[in-house]
Length: 247
Image (tube, rainbow, N blue to C red; front, side, top):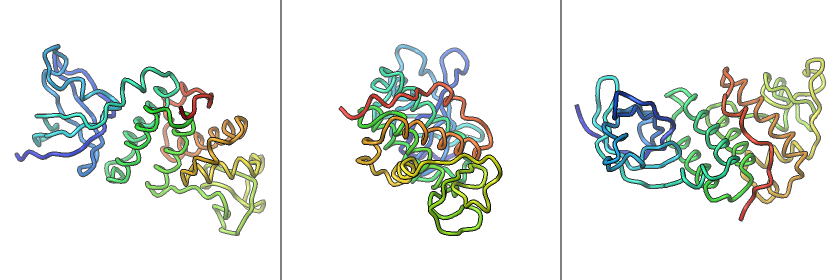
């Protein structure tokens, strides 16, 4: 069986035996990878700390039948410490890696990898509010997976907007003819913020009122969880506070 090398984000780990771990990674060139890291729970391990969640590493793996084996790991991005030191960053990062892990193997592309690395880097540096970084990631990762939300044309019939009703199950905003009874109205400034989150327009995002940020977050959460078909457990712990912005 051949060996191969790739860049990877560590999504999660599980204990295996007395000293090993199973590591789930999102790699740049090989999609999602599950591999055994032998001996990493021993204090003498040379690369155990490089295979913790939120870390980015250059890994060499031996291709096995069911699980690969980590042979080497060199750190490319040590984001875990700075993220773990702030509760809002930590919970947002958990929601991001859980989402990445929930995507199917066919959706785990190099663009998905780069998007996640960029999000974790921004979280670790406190460049913007943690919840806004998470919301932008969720909208963009949904778009990369073929579930791009509509914030202008009706998601059902395609008639041009502006529209003020949002239905996650239908794919975004809908016109009055297509909107089911009881569909929530969305303020135009909230829709402007949602468009900015998709584009990564941080000047608009950082200047948004807290009420609009909270409203947008609720819609993003509903949209992402509907299309992933199962709830993102980590979102229950994500703080609604957007007070920690760029520093």
